[in-house]
Amino acid sequence: MTVVVLGAGRGIGREVARQLAEAGREVRAVTRSGGIPEGTQDVRADLLDREATMRAVEGATVVHLTAGVPYPDWSAVLPTVVDNAVAAAEAAGAKIVYADNLYAYGPVAGPLTESTPERPAGPKEELRSALGKRLRRANVPVAIGRSTDYYGPGGVGSLNGELIIKPMARGRGAVWFGPLDVPHAFAFLADTAKAQVVLGDDERADGKVWHTPAAGALTVREFIALTGRVLGNHRKPLRLPRKAVAALGLFDRRLRGATELDHQRSRPWVVDHSAFEATFGPLPATPHDEAIARTARWYRES
Image 1: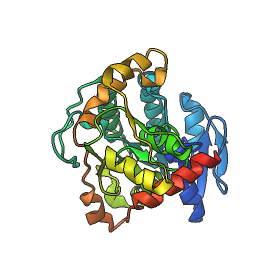
Image 2 (image 1 turned 90 degrees about the horizontal axis):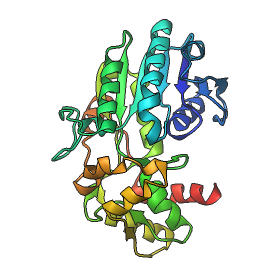
Image 3 (image 1 turned 135 degrees about the horizontal axis):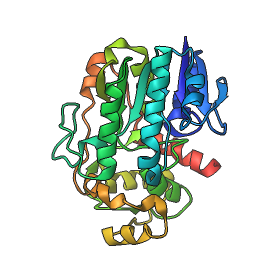
Image 4 (image 1 turned 120 degrees about the vertical axis):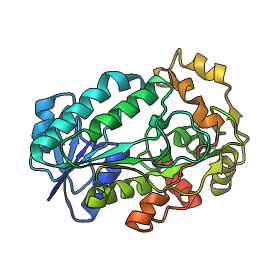
């Protein structure tokens, strides 16, 4: 049984491929430029090329769609990537597991559950909602695992990784784009990947959206203070106001449109994953202090 990971060179895809290979599975790691985990088959393909994607997926039983794309390129790239992945999986008769985020719900009041209505309010949110609907129309089994913001070794582009753990690991102060005293759920990358593997292996996941498990929500101030205790760095954090983030976006394309997601940082962002554990059994989340220590070590070594 061949498992294909589309986007296996970084982030969640690399960790999914690594865990599968560590478990002795036959893993085809698909990237444009390599950098795959040990024990996986190196396959190069541009996921914007349908024929190349279909060749990469041929003979697969499960396809993990994990390809990461920078924020500014989402609308231009992700619809094609998803369409090509669906076409390739349908040709192979393979199940799709999609590593998604929570943007499709839009602004919410209260904990997020899988039954929370999707009410996207901005372009990124509307796109994620549309992609999820496209996947659910596929003619093969599809399971969607939605994760809150994750951090961890290999988590390039992680918000709290880049703004909190990375600078604090290097002796500087944390930075945050919003209020510090709002609860926010953060997930550890390895836990999120483990949940995606579970969804790929269990038929009970098919046809549904699942929230992947994470350690308990903390306020951002609490998360920064915990990071400080773990790392022995007690510098005060810098909070950037909304106008500053918008101004920075003029010079850093990664921040353009970031203010669309202000509600995720200005309101409680708490995720209920009880449906996952009720169905598949407990998936213990790595405690934040251990996860922070492992992530800081990676930043220092990278």
